[in-house]
Image (cartoon, rainbow over all chains, first blue to last red; front, side, top):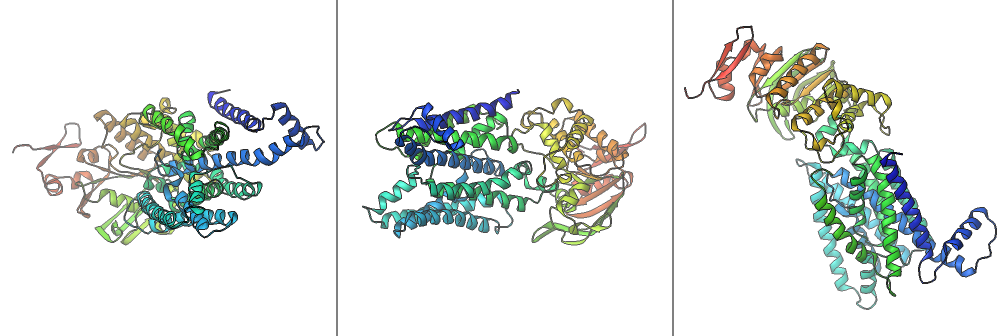
Length: 335
Length: 256
């Protein structure tokens, strides 16, 4: 086995081990043997002799949350991979075009107008798509500039504008009910994920993933200067629109159910690139494996290290910042 | 194969050159000479369809260039830009494979044949041993050759090279010019720009002198590269000297 294949196998193995561990640990510990018997029983459809508590904890409590961590982590990492390649910049995160800020504004609006959770999620999802749509629409109308630079700058400006709208809503929100809910959402959390949330987010994330997988070779050409890619026969405007749409769909679906979880989409593609190089076809699967494993590890820590839940956004930053600086110092000119 | 008739070119809303006409047949080499900012790169980008022509006609095999898709153009015209900044550490082989894009389906990955073509062009440029190296870690000259390899992997019939020798040492300059002459012998038409009039003498059948976006003169290098045209083009005095074994060279006169 060559070293690249070994990297995938190790990453997949680590993910599998972490998943088993995540099901086992918590307020109500479940042994690996019990998890295994339950899995066998579920797959074969036979009955089992485990306590009902075990089944509830594994299937109802931890199941959705573990799966959500996997889906959200993989989706954020995939979107980050696409964006970093496209913007020819290894320091870009999936929020560069304002998807997270737009989603946050949508969710905050939902909370502000006292909507139910389903509407808050829908607003968040729609807000993310709308923000990127707006940035893309304005950015592609600024002629006479490098198209990517125009997009990034528009993203920054619109992001700031949406940020101040969020700040205004926080200022106006009821400080006893709404403000804590807003703060909680903005910090991100997987604690209250329901199977229904998962049923909404996972298909949308897959829908975004499909074009990325299909275009995995061609996406590499977006890392070239625009003129070069076009001279090689690529309609860069079309390809870029497809990739932005797919990455935005994935990010918005993830953020709508988890709230803002930073760092995954920035760090993970970067780390994966150091392991297997920049080719999207090789990078995308590894980044998704690592993203899923990273967020699952973080979320498992969040619910086990203290008697209260630690927001994952706090922990990803706590782990992410030193890791990122270390990577940055380590990497030379080439990524 | 390429026909340019009274072409006006430039950026959207700003015409920087006009009245450029020439035709380039199979296996012909034309060198475009002119000062910095004279419109060479903009002319090339227009011929590649990267900028829209402002006026005049641009025909590729008798078909208007504007009617062709990016993919169709890329199957006929290979482009070697002035220089390439590598952003990511793709290997030289991956870089060469990019040239196969126009021959592949939208969702395809490179086939065995694509790999063979990439390996073949890398080998033909003496770069086979660099195939596994990251493009960001090879020398400037090697990167320039990798750009040529990528364009050749397109299997084009016309190769457009924008100052292919600009960042190269003397030896690599000569090697690139030799390569240009060699490619032309295989029937590929070549359009290249240079800052050295000698390069036109060395490997071009025709030279186009471009000043402020207009044709100063066009013809064989022997006809158009003269002391007076070079004076008008670059504003310096140059002697054009015949060489003992045939051919000519340009020698600037300094301090006279």
